[in-house]
Image 1 (cartoon, rainbow, N blue to C red):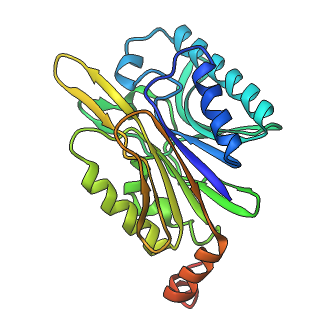
Image 2 (tube, rainbow, N blue to C red; image 1 turned 135 degrees about the vertical axis):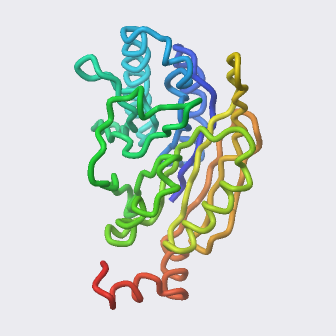
Length: 264
């Protein structure tokens, strides 16, 4: 099965760029496309000073564009989106196909003084529930960038039989090497693929300059980085294999060891 990660800065309102990448993916037999964080919407620091009506207009327009492209190219897409509901703003991920639309609210949000999504968004803080779905015999789970740091986000990966973790992110500053290590560790200890799509571009305010470095990648269930993009707008097209998953799980036996302890 072929899947793809598209690393972007904020997209314009025109659908031309997305149509271009959808067409490339379709020609390469891609069945699922993952977008990076803050690609459909402006970056968080811009959203903080944007009227709610404009945020809603931007999100609704981008969702309509994605719906049309999913139908046109018969493809599924997973993308972070700022979801406006009842005059409240939620940080969510949308999964679209030619026939359906599903929203999942992010469950862990950045809460640093210089980047406080937890304060801005109305997401509820409850028991973690891993979003999951299947495409062509592969089971996918969605764990957003910040959520990847929390063990509880992985407590359901083996229980739900996840094959591929989709990780949209907006990583910046000097975190690239740390990200590589955590992705390798999470993929290896859970015997899953991880496809990460990271934002590119810059944002400046009076205090910081956010440089989003890209480096979107695919990590194998053996904990090895198979493919990595550079630091500019690009699309990463990869092939994932059920046989490779089976071999890694048979070799290391993490799930079997856990099942003996009634954890799963």
